[in-house]
Image (tube, rainbow over all chains, first blue to last red; front, side):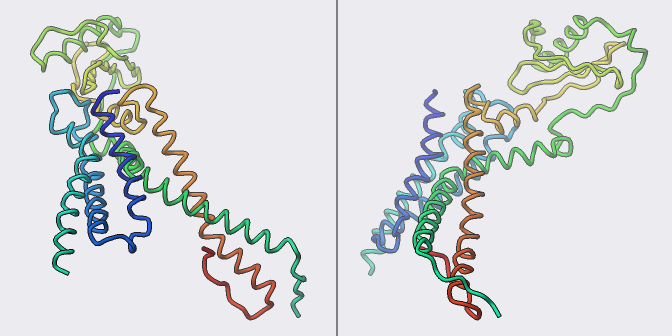
Length: 99
Length: 205
């Protein structure tokens, strides 16, 4: 199994499992955790769209030279939710200071 | 007048069992549905694209009538060589070896043969059976989409991923149906116990 496929599998199954865990009793969690949850979820939804389009457009087998397509198709399912989590953590921390 | 059967001792046990089943169905529906969302989105999107592969121009659609009787068709080896030559010409190189022919699809009624090559784009060359004229050269995009759809694009064993997605879809269908049906069963039982004039209550938690 290549590193790209391993990253894709983590993004494909690990991220939603983590979201389910984080989403359990969400209202009882801190503002920062809630922000992380929502931003990660947003990142994951965007990543599903990006990965789906990258998977079959153009409809030909990707090569190692297709760096952008590889990133979009394989790594986006992990990278975009992670980016969302970072944004959520920063914004959630700001909200906490304001209130 | 409606006759109400007296409540039995097994009724609370059945209700508890039903409630436990509803709880299991709820978590199966939730967890499996969320975890397999991305896989099912890709399978659904590629499935729709495959259903409309002609309309979307994903496969070459050559209209051609036979130029001579099938008995006058060129030998398969010659047709394969023509296909290889035409398929490798756009790349600007030497014709590929015969091993690069994936398959040849002979259509006597249309008077042509489709020579499919083993390359990243799955190039298909349509060649006239009797004259050897190249009618069309283009990628066979639906083959790649089929591989994405089945999971084969990552390797032979990856069809198990689409199998798993299909099983998950069945489980979410059955659990969703149960979650819709369970409160109605409970409501009807309570109606039977309480007599006429009562209304079904909410989903058991």
